[in-house]
Amino acid sequence: MGMSVYTTVSAEDLDAWLARYALGGLVSHEPITSGIENTNYFVTTERGRFVLTLYERLPADELPFYLNLMAHLARSGVAVPAPAPDRTGALFSLLCGKPAGLVDRIDGAPHLVPSAGDCAAVGEALARLHVAALGYRARLVNRRGPAWWRQAARAVQPFLSPSQAELLAAELRFQSGLTRLRLPKAAIHGDLFRDNVLFAGDRVAGIVDFGFAATDFLAYDIAIAVNDWCDADGTLDAELAAAFLAGYHALRPLTDEERAQWPGLLRAAALRFWLSRLYDLHLPRPGELVHAHDPAAFERILARRVAAMPRLPDARAA
Image 1 (cartoon, rainbow, N blue to C red):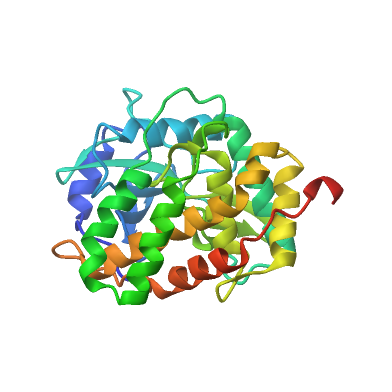
Image 2: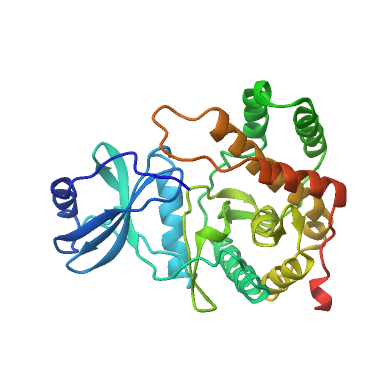
């Protein structure tokens, strides 16, 4: 990942903004150089340690969905950073012209080469998140959903080789032919990759980065996570996938319809991230400071999911 500070925040500006909170004065702040969508700083005040996020892309009218979701999950006992309200109860306000908010800083580190135990722990944490999310009433259409897939596909078309264009067109046709109306829906994380889970030892200390949260199919959220956590150079690692799904199943058993749709959901999750990486690589926004992720990894994952169509391990027998 590359540098992701698009807006520079001075100590003076931050200290003045912090006056709206009952968190004491600013002690220190330092930029966080990972992530793609937003500007992030570690902030220490006289009363605590926080992560400050300036939302660079998210429309201000969508912010309540994300921040209230995090607050709901934290109240429900899910390991997520709790947003800090200001003195009026607001979870965000303008800083340097951008909507900005504070969340609790979680101590921990990502496990970038996960074990089966890590996968089981993340599966269980995601199930806990989904069970709590079923009680969250706000709704938000997924801005990286099928309508965006089609738009992004048209935009990246000129940059594709003939074989890439064929894979993309075939997958869009396949996905458009599927009916998923009977799958359970609620708020999903939408981006549960290895770098968005912090561990303290072998325990999940926190799930972070809710910038792609939306109302969508719960099993699609599982597929997004499994494609990253259980990937072995494009191939699904059967041991890691079984561990992840067993951890999830212990708290929220999948429905028969979710199980039937699983192979297509793995493909949908691969398609979504192949497209977003192609888009970020070939059509970066002006002033982009981030090194885009390599789209080839998700092209490989998609091609292999199409070839293998992996069935769901029977967690009920595990």
